[in-house]
Length: 120
Image (cartoon, rainbow, N blue to C red; front, side, top):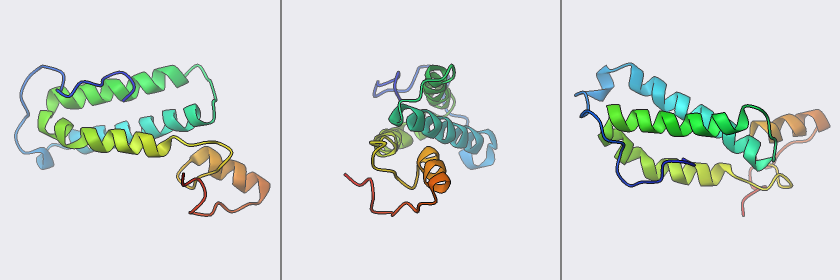
């Protein structure tokens, strides 16, 4: 979501009919979710790796691909993607349960993350 902020999907061919019959759509959506979460976790904890920038770009590229192949799905998901990305971003001083880095740090320290922590 960091690169492509237009309200229209990238131009290309129209949607390919019934999405539920196409096994690639769920895979693309899951890949986009996982890559985006990975990038958001590292950005929240200010962890710069050689993969941080490419991960954020990959999430944007996957969104663009979904927009080209499934424009209706892209329009349906766009707002949710932005909202989820906003929720995934957090202050690392307030660990949150949905962050794998926070969970790993807490587990190493023998701590439990309260579901109410991190809500700002």
